[in-house]
Image 1 (spheres, rainbow, N blue to C red):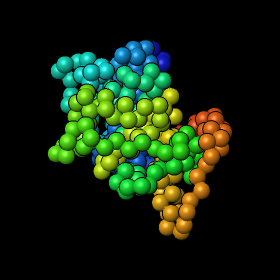
Image 2: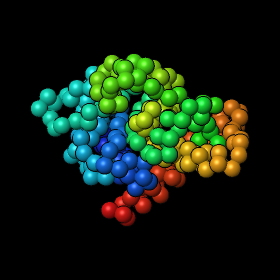
Image 3: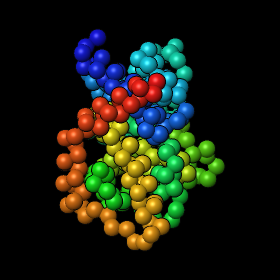
Length: 238
């Protein structure tokens, strides 16, 4: 086992614990990483609560959403979110899917767009896309991304954005590394909370595209500062 592979597994386990501790996931939600030496594969936990994941729970899955070991453990129903994003976006190295409450609100209110309102979310563009599953699968689904076709539609909606909301469901965030995706997922929820509260007081002022770009560049060099704190906090809680 290479050092890079071992480090990826370690970060993926930590990511599961951090996302739970930061209240981005609960018993549901998941995080994955592209395989460090096999870009046509991804690494993700077997189907279980993120807070309980350890290294032995991580499995390899191909970009069809199928496990490399056919007789392996039960997998997440929505693994196709991850596999189809990796297929469409070679730049993506990690994916976080969650149902954090504040973000769900922004996917169900017409005429409201999640925008970058604080410098920690400079990676957001002026608007955040919302995936409407009714448009591609009708109005009788359970809103889950259960197959490659739905995963492909979600990836198309995400396009080149860093995040996509899913109406009545949650959100999906991508990054250039596990730590990057986790950083984005945590601050996406916080940005949404700030925007939701500020909208009660009046008209909000979001970042300009230039401010957002500059803030994102500054934050991208500081990710380990947050990661180290969140990892310690999650370890202390356990």
